[in-house]
Length: 142
Ligand SMILES: [Ca+2]
Image 1: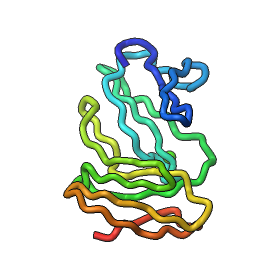
Image 2: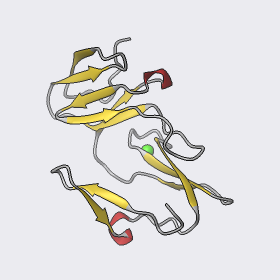
Image 3: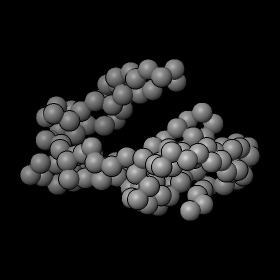
């Protein structure tokens, strides 16, 4: 996002990030992008992208995936919380983008069977909770 088209990195499944061409990613931001926030704009439980443009209008990309998700709604006071589901870890972060902030929601692929989720809270405590296979939202115990 330095005045070019931007760059999307795809995880190859082995922990390596591989650059995608604009044609492959479908993302083209031809203007002077300054920020990126991730949030669910249309309430379909799939994260959408919101680009802030320097001296220009916001550009949004709605997620076109049909994949089902499990969302974990958090609050800004949960910054630093890590949630691990089926070997995939998500962490709630703050800042990192100019005058923009992503939603405090973690999104995972929907598990195909009942599974255990590990929660690492900002104070270092670790706990586990069970998630049913048909769950689409996981509200963590407070
Ligand atoms: Ca969405």
